[in-house]
Image (cartoon, rainbow over all chains, first blue to last red; front, side, top):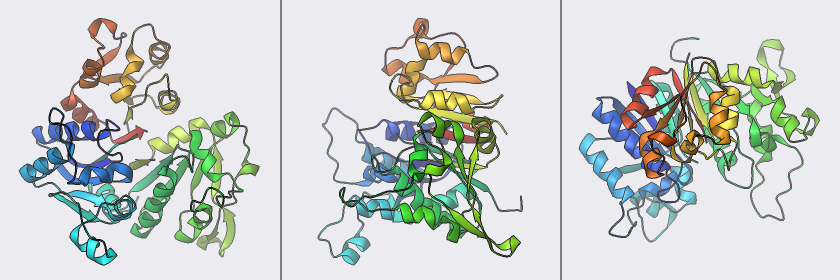
Length: 130
Length: 136
Length: 101
C-alpha cells in the first residue's frame, strides 16, 4: 500500500517521533511504499541538524536522515509551522533575512498542501502526535 | 463520490489557547479547502471549546483567530459537526457557540448555519463515513 | 469501512481511550500505543472498560508494553500484542486510521 505518515510532535519530549520512525521502518521492511512523511506542529523540530543528544542516546534527526537516504523518502517539513519554530532552509534564511539555517539533510520545507496531497494520493494516512 | 475526490474529516478534540493545535488545524483546513475535496469538520471532547463565542485574547497577547472560524463558510467549508454529549458534559449549549454561516449556492445563496449539533452515535457514523481523518 | 483507532494516552490521565471507545463501530480495531498501553494492565479500571466493548478488536504495541515492564501475565485477556510490523498490517487491514491524540 501507499502510505502517508504525519508526525505532529518534536523528538524526545514525546514518543511520537520514535513510534513514527519504527512504524516507517516496519512498513518499508514489508515492502510498502511511503509516499511522504509530513512534519507538522512541533514535529518540525525533527528536522533541525543542530540536535546534539547525549552519546548514549539515539539521534532521532540523524535516524530520519539516514532512513531518507536509504529509501529516498520524501520528508516534508511544513513551512508555516517551521518558521514559527525557527526551522529554516537556506532559501528561507535569505528570504527572511536571518543569519543561519538549520534544516537537516534529507528534509525539505514546503507548504501544507503537501499534507492534503498526501491524503489524496495515499491509501492510508497515519498520524503520530500527542 | 466522484473520482479523485476524497472525503476529508478534520477531528478537533483539543481546546484553543492552551496549545497551538486548534490554530494550526485551521491553517490546514484553509489550505485544504483549495483542493476541492469533500471537507467536514468535527468538534468533540475539548474541541467544542474552540467554537465558544466571546474570545478576547488581548490581555493574553496572542492572535485572536476566532474570525477564522467565522470565515470558514467563505472557503466553502460548510459542514461543521459538533457533538451534543461533549457540549452537555461541559455545561455548554448550542447558544454558547459562534454563529458560523455559509451561503448556499444551490438555494439562491441563502445564508444557512454551518454548525450541526450531532449525537455521539451520529459522530461515530460521520467518522466511519470519511476516507481520510486528520486529527488535531 | 472498518477503522483502526490508535490511542497513545494513559487512560488514567486523559480521556482519549474513553472517547475512542465511545466512537468505535463494530468491526473496528483499537490499537494502544505509547502510554495508551497502560490500559491493558489486568485489574485496572481501563482494562475493565476494554472488556466491556463488544465487537471491537483490542491490540497493544509490544515495544511499548516491554518498555513499560508490562509482561504477558499482567496483560488483561482479549488483547492482541503486535509488533511494529503488526501495526503496519492493521493499518493495511482497515480502510482508514484515526489517531485519538
